[in-house]
Image (cartoon, rainbow, N blue to C red; front, side):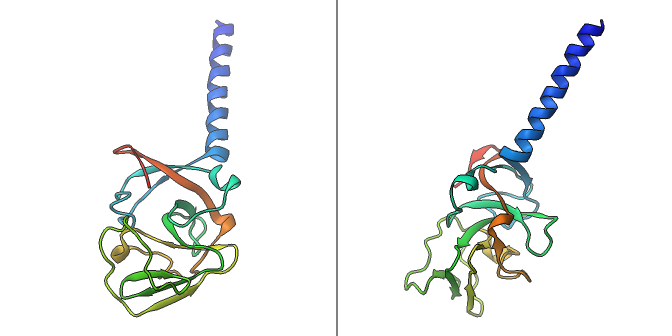
Length: 171
């Protein structure tokens, strides 16, 4: 009986250790509590991100990332990367322009056209990123934060897929 209990303890400890290593070093699990990323990620969806993705490559424009919210680093946010280090981001008439381009950013993922506001200009510092939600008219994103930019080291993972309630790969 003692040998069987010991075998069960080994299995449980091994499973806990594997789960700890996976969750700490390989994957990030997050719930999206608001509609800021709709229709890409719906309110209440749970997503899995790869912590390894940004160890081997830099974040890219268009990636959906899990990161520590710059105004309260105890909170994780999920948003799309729009501005890269050293770039300028201009928002004019509800459209996003990068580095003074005449053409707005092609954003097929946004839920609906942005309601035009006063023009906004952002200069992304080195080692930082500018994030926005896909549901621009209802997203509390970098346009509204006190600390506008997300530092590279605060980006936790690249979101790969949604697993609950409706599984799917995200783009």
